Length: 491
Image (cartoon, rainbow, N blue to C red; front, side):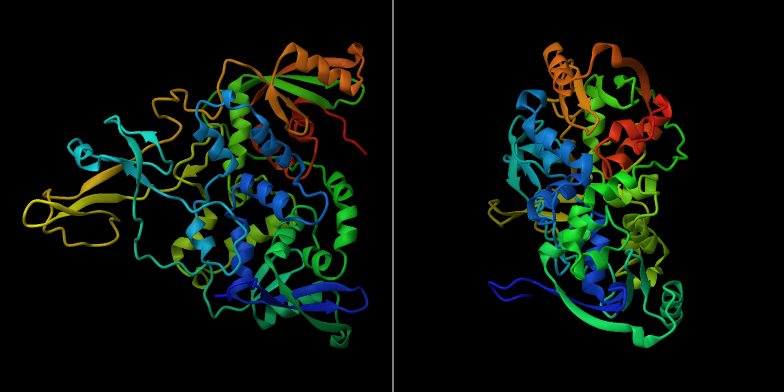
């Protein structure tokens, strides 16, 4: 642990091709690989927030994803059924947060998850199971508030993602391999290197801010380490938008329907360019887009949203291909291969991600011999405890309260209807009105005869395509729905 007032740093050795001033690969240990793998666990909303807050590389945003996050911040509280709904989107939970917090550098600044039970726990136990929530002051079935914090001490130990004594190679494109002679030879061969004298070694110390820059480069570069560490960051910043424009393509998704109706949306295009100006839909359309913020980056790769050959995809494939013996536990790798949402989140049924397991808490009380309560306990089922003396014959199991389906939000959604919502091409979401539509068209200075209206149905494929485009383009709707609108490619 770092001393008070000092900043954690990770040392990394770079193998550099001297003439081209290009990183061939980095030799890394557990600390750095844990940081890289943690990127895949971060919800997209967290990535948008962290990049904006910490990044010094301009522009400090992630294409349309940042606009979507900003939309939630800007929406009036009246658009949300409860304050909790907005909080869930702005501070989405990471289903693997315990692993990330044990890493040497953790860029996720989301507050640790807390669990709350009824303030009047004894009375509430008369009708078990006891309700448990990760949000304070939700209403219990007995009428009291869920505001009593639970001790979640489980005696589980977390030590990042990979084994302590592991050694790895990380390529310029963020592919991670175990350190071995055959891998080294293959990398050198792929780089066209015959003479070892053309290679030099450099040592760099990585700070938290550089980790954020590293994450950001993963979305816009196939030479991440070179751009970040070899004095090319300034050029990378200037070329950021140009790079995104060149990569504005969507790989066809082979996705089967999820046995549910699509979302009907009205889109308005510009005839002369085929570019979508905005889309208008009911609250379910806005709600579907906002669920993007809760999806972990690795899950997007699993769905095909990172299927283009970029650094994020290379990182995900490295985790999938890495032998499970290199991970701290077999469970850790399984969570990467089949990512899940944090248990308190729901995802629109167009997408097929699962929720993580709800912590299985059991509540009991210790009483003294005079019948007076000494202490309340709430412990996970993983720890065996001696329940005597105990008021009840057995522990009382808990029931997880879904924050989107409590009595104050019968619609089980993040935003309220029946107000329609307008979504611009770069995923700025606002309540729609005749005034807002006219104002947008006036700002764009587009003549009426150049407008075309079309009604489309958005299913799983369209959703993933929009999500994929949101990470690399300011024209997420145009690119994501190009197969429905025959949009012309921009040069």
